[in-house]
Image (cartoon, rainbow, N blue to C red):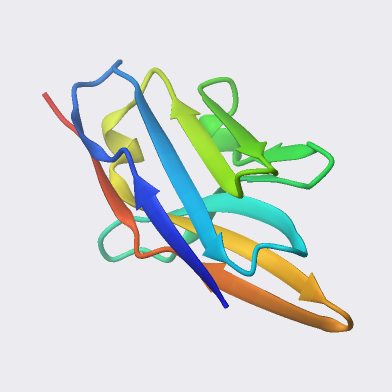
Length: 119
């Protein structure tokens, strides 16, 4: 089992920055793709950014050039640096980690952290 704990959310003014962290504990061997997703009220959960074990990244068009994802494989931690934040970035942000064991694939989610961008 893997437990994910997120931190770093909060209230920030438009144009500001936040850094989200997600730390995994438990059986972190076999973790492959990790990423961040977000869900605004009344909307579906969407991918924000993902990063593979080798460091290949993917970003939603709406955050390209403003957000940067990174990971520390040894620590089982993934980060999301968010700059130039906009009110439309307001959402609950969830960390997700995929883990492969033999032929099985497991998906783990964090509890979510609120990000509010408002003046």
